[in-house]
Length: 386
Ligand SMILES: NC(=O)c1ccc[n+]([C@@H]2O[C@H](COP(=O)([O-])OP(=O)(O)OC[C@H]3O[C@@H](n4cnc5c(N)ncnc54)[C@H](OP(=O)(O)O)[C@@H]3O)[C@@H](O)[C@H]2O)c1
Image: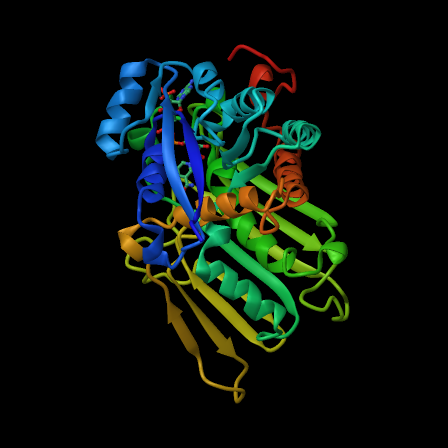
């Protein structure tokens, strides 16, 4: 049978759009995906159609591929099945609404929106229009992540009671970012929490929450956050969140029936200072029968170790590779294709409800620390001119 082909429209031409498109163009056979395929049929830039044309030629997208100088033109293209939104966080709500209102399915970069209220509106809009919508947390679709979740569900480390996850890049923010860069610019919803902390929370949620049956998942009962502002812009340069879940995983049977987590992100210290994995691991998943350690970075991990309790087996380490020299973004794209093929509106691996709960944790972390963004990017009014 011919593979199910998905026709992509790319909204924005920045750094991650290029990485994503290069992965989309790689041969699915290299990763043993024979049931789906991808075609990039249109690219749009908010600056000019020539910028979109340059992106098409630089990334090597085969012709025909339409080049648009506005996002409005892209979402009106009848040949596009799904739009990939790759703008800064500040713009996700407006851009996704634009696509949904035009009747397009959407894959939107993380963090989904600036706040949970915006995510809820996107979800309700997709639901009412019968459209597919997914937050692009690519890490969840890695074979490594799938295997770690399966190990937990199979009880390989017993009942999991604690997880710690970190994603930190200790670049000098004054030198690397100044004040305008999207990483620290509050007008673009910059900061460690929405950009990096989302991955630390991804590991907390995909291990402590997602490994329970859907009807047994409960949002954190307590969230405590400390935020250090970046002195030049007020965006967060460091955020640490403590969470308690009223459940344990995988059976939710352990006394006292709670699990704990630490999710952290920092722009001045490193998860892995020499970037050779000397400081491993980035993620520790601790259960009553042992531990799983994941070597970072949290967004693109390459290995895990299963460490059983003393006397109960050998340490087992498994390394993963990226087929066709890719970055690993094709696995989330394949999930989108399969969901569209199967008529699903959301991905089971990161469903709407879980995205909303995670956004609520980030809202609460900000609320406790008085971190707000400009009103127009926190707004739930569509359309709002940004
Ligand atoms: N999955 C990952 O590993 C990963 C990695 C990096 C970033 N991201 C996410 O991807 C998104 C984009 O990040 P990026 O690093 O690609 O950013 P970037 O390089 O700055 O690109 C963002 C693009 O958005 C468009 N844009 C529209 N309005 C804009 C505005 N007012 N200011 C700046 N750009 C504007 C621009 O494209 P046009 O001019 O063509 O419209 C710009 O090139 C963010 O949500 C980020 O969190 C994900």
